[in-house]
Figure (cartoon, rainbow, N blue to C red):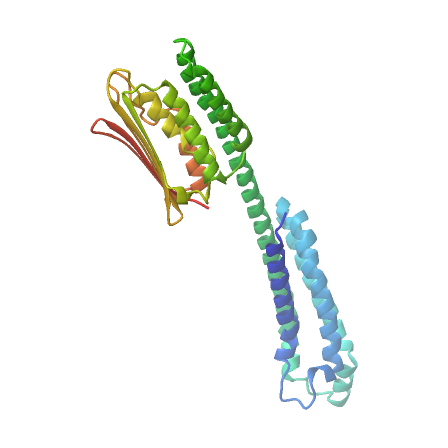
Length: 351
């Protein structure tokens, strides 16, 4: 389906073409004559015939011949019909020319001298030129129209594929996230920890958010930050005193929107690989918006004897793919493991 902008452009180009096309005979009519082109009966008769015939041919070629024959590679039939229409046009044109009252009167008064007026010379090659002009522009306009239609269909299909893929990635992310959260609660229940009931309540809030908001293309950053805070509070319940959890948020950065569940996989990994019951560790999450750019940093100590993530987990793979689909190359993601720390730094535009 063509957009309104495309249709308006096509109508505009068509009007410009027809204005120029229908003015061509007047431009070639010699200005030295005492009478104008419209004062010549012969000119008017030929002009009216040409305008009607070539207009009909223009739309017949673009609406029927090209779609029915040329588009189906019936080139021979198409060529024969075009040549036939040209010969028919030239024949009728010549008959009108010879039988015009002005022509008859001219030869009656100049029986031995052929007409040499410039406007007569124009019509000696003009019909073929006008026909080929109508043929060229009707073909080009149809080809361009079909290209625009195909391009819009391609964009629509691409958009649908992206939406389908993003929906699939989100649906894969939610079970992955909930599975990890349930593991955290399970670790509390088997130790008969009183924190388990509080953890269940926090998880219910998290589940509500993932069910209600994760299908949206964008969500307010304030909602996403509240969700992240609930998750961090849930993880605090299972963390020991040896883990220092720092969560820094610029309060003035909340009045923007981002894709939902985009940051949580990195935070998940930080808690999954950065908590220890023996060693002192630190997990730091910082989020702020500067000049319409979100700056996200998630850093954790690498616990000995626990394999640090290499960016190949389900959550990380999904978030990388979502970033590619949503932002193309307009984002910067840096993941590094250095000096005993695992650090994720992400920058992207917010709306």
